[in-house]
Length: 177
Image (tube, rainbow, N blue to C red; front, side, top):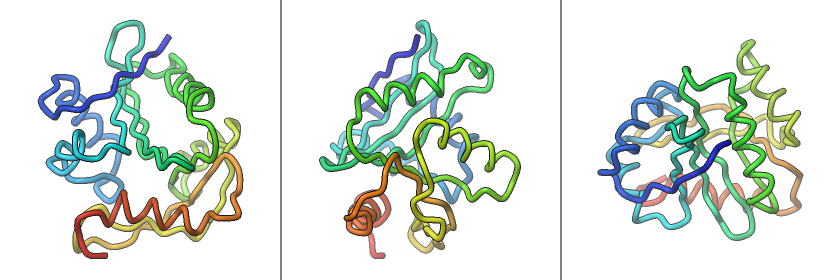
């Protein structure tokens, strides 16, 4: 059984351990600078950086944003030695039970076998591709937009406005577009 523990301090020992997983699980264009992430733990109230624990052991990380009218699921990663224990599925079940309403996530385009499997996994869990021409803004100043797919648990008439809110908070906050 999993539990989530919100981390609010970059000095937290589990945060330090999870940074290695964060760097291994996500390519540079899909993650922020570690110092920036650490500073955001307390400063950004809409962001929840969570340690995922399974039976008392650190199993992975899950980061999401609460925008009041919708959620953005930013990062989910499980340590390789903790895989095949349905931890990711348990996190998705937790999300479904606790984050009501529209939930958005970005996923690599289905161009490789692993990306295809990931898209199908999210589809089996109630998500669908809402925008297959989505461009993720860069996490870093001077970076370039990165092509991804935007998935969600349902469509929304106000999706474009919500995506702009997401981009402003997650990618542009504190810097020029």
